[in-house]
Image (cartoon, rainbow, N blue to C red):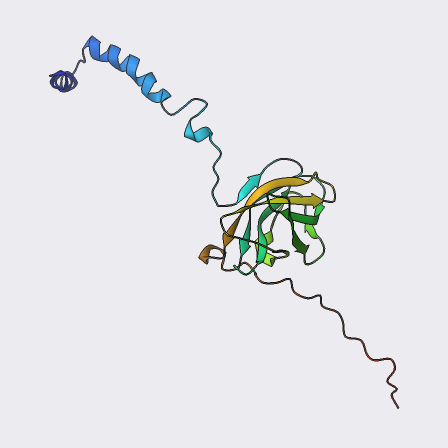
Length: 188
């Protein structure tokens, strides 16, 4: 019955006062449904499985460890130096929630972090981790920089999948040393 009145009112050229009053009251209420402190548009969007930390001088974005399932892992994520001068990642510490420290290595020694630029750790696979790396668990990560405050965060361990097919995995490569000639060997 009310629907019939609404249709008849809308068909006429001049809507009734009741309809105008109802629209005046209901329209702001409907508009308020998508706003407020808890509205979805005010929530932080976490686009990937990794953890993001946006505090301090260096942001760690979408950080996680990819494992090959054989105790080898690679730290992936983007490090963004927010400061006006260059910085560098100097050390990485990975431990279990129980406090057991895993072997972790920055293969190149340090990682340069230019000012206001992202450095994608997955591209080089430069940060390797060795130990009990079970997919689905969380590990505690500490990143130490030359200038910025350290980043402390719990990150997930994920198995290598098609999403991470380009991440270099495997044991830490042995250091390359230049070949030296044998000085005891005399040449005629």
